[in-house]
Figure (cartoon, rainbow, N blue to C red):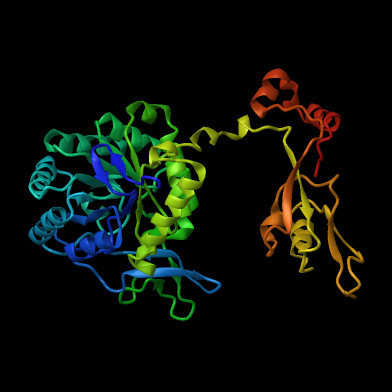
Length: 445
């Protein structure tokens, strides 16, 4: 059976599934209950300066009967006294010595404030620290959270303050609310951080009530930006994770990443790990379904590893990173076409509508007698000679595997855009580009 245990730069846990720093890790009761349920670690809800929270704190996006596709929150850091949190951290670590207990920290931009709280937390015996440089709401007016993470110089400076006194691993949590996440990642590496975690929540306003004109969530008639999370942010998180994990300067540092952002299933977790994460953190899914979801995560990942012969997590962490590329290095000679299995087709014609209205007009509706059953509807048929392989039809089709994208050999040269303009710079002129297309049978739409 596969070994799911991980070593995260000295922080060990029985599996890579951690609670993210959020409401599910707000107390010792919750963290210990999570460990009993099977979670491998927990990043404690951020501790720091005294705060006052508000009501309502959460807003959600629901879509076609699916609850909480996205979740927005304006909740601040822990509003429980620091002394209480420290006592419960020590208790959780004492009761679960083989699980990862990590303290998330956010205080004002003063060296003495950061170093004092780090020293106090170390006395609890926690395994490490996560520096919250990513929270987009509530604390920016105090120069905290993403206000620091958005400025690489501040990220480096505060990390260096912490590294001066910390004797346990220090994880820097990055904000997605930047133009280029690689820059603050490099700043953390420069400051000798032990690891990174990403992404924190995304700046957002959840919506507007069309009757009252109030912002969602509504806090006594007012509203504003908050942190956006949940399944809807997963593609953004994967992009930012891969951007950091594939950066040459980061790779030289050889430090791990804890990935988060929309993880709900074991498949999600594996995707993050294939793109470079050593551990994964979960929040919204736990708030939606409870701690029990970790059972499926453990079983699913373990079975997947067994099927593919992976003995431990290090066998597949980062395995998909070499496949990340730029458009300029894509194979211009690769061609696929859409093929429709009419035995599965329900004649909804969504593929025809999508192709005809918004794509490349290469699907026709034809009268085809497939069975003795009389049908009043026409069948969608792809004109393969005109199909550009965009895959929109396969994306809108409601029937699994009814439309498949099939690779075909067109005889085109297998060349990338970068190679093409190097060998034939004249194609940057329209007439030469058209000539090249015609010569290599590339459709013009």
